[in-house]
Amino acid sequence: MKTRKIGSACKAALAVAVAGSLFAGSAQAQLGGHNVILVHGFMMDDLSNPPQSFEEVQQAGADNWRAFWLSRAEARIDWASDGRVEGKIAQQAYQQIRQISQQGLCNNYCILVTHSTGDLVTRYVLENQARWLQAEGLPPLKILTSIDLAGAGGGTELADLAMSIAYNDSWYNWPVKEAVKAFTGIDPQPGKMGVVNDLQTNVARNLAVSPNSIPRLRFVGGGSSYGGITKPFIAGTDDGVVPTHSACGATTSEGIDSCSNSITLGGKVTSTNGPDGLYYNNYPVLMSEGLSHGGQINTETGNTAVPVINNVSVNGLQVDFASRTYYQRAWWQLWGKGDKYVEVPGSDQTYMSSLIYTTLNN
Image 1 (cartoon, rainbow, N blue to C red):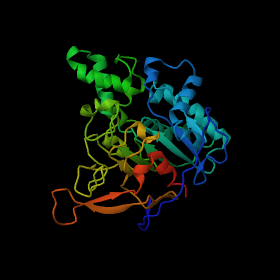
Image 2: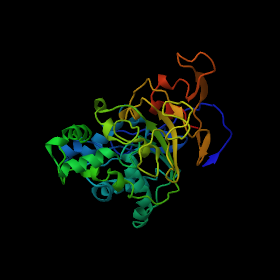
Image 3: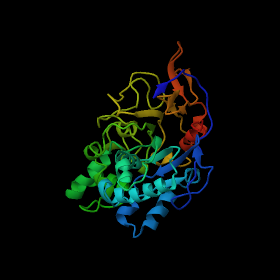
Image 4: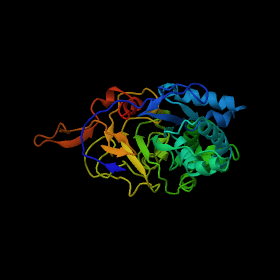
């Protein structure tokens, strides 16, 4: 990733388009001249009611992205959450990337947009797709970068708890059980947890972790989900599902409060508990203190975005969100400029996906 001179320019749009099937067929569905592929996150309904056909999996995948991204992507990689990443999920993913390769959709490079567990699935696909496709005489997909919204590549403590409850369903665990049920949609049982097995922090952090040449751009929220009942069980700050250490791409699962050591999730410029290190080629771009897990891909507004790594070129994609700094005094501060803050101006008037869309189409 090459750094360039800092500015505050706000560009225009990440254009992409998917219909209810694998391919949208729209030549206009692009970001910066590159086709976009969507990879959805964990679908809790798959645990309580496993899909009976791949058509059901595809329909759920389309519905997941409908609020914003569905009409703005060229293809999707849909997968069923009752499977494991290295098993059923990999098989489903391969059948779709095989079609994408045959169609030549990534001949001019594609951009991936992932949500939640889609981050982990994508990491596994990126590590293996060249070998899979070349074994069949097909060209590997050319991927420019991946835009990871609320990425769960580092796992979540909720999955750790879910697996623990599955094997120790004692009455005194009821507060934990309620939080876990909000996350999984079921009373955890051995053999029925699907991809939740892979979302355990230690499992996720040992799955497809070889250094990868494809940059991962991370977008991070700190709001609530499920009425806030999951928050006490997640290390550090979180979006109600995914801990900040996972969403930022931190190299350890220790609880942290921000993707930066000098900017809080709310944009205050001060010393804070950030990551000791980031996975290779992982770049936290924007944080938003009030943004919920699902808010990353729907039309949730009212949340100020905070730039972390900005004004850089990633494989030719310009990451240049508008930014401003300002000072704010607390009511009790009678002198001085107050505390320094940084933000993307006007970001509270739009939603995260739209902000990304309207900035990264260079």
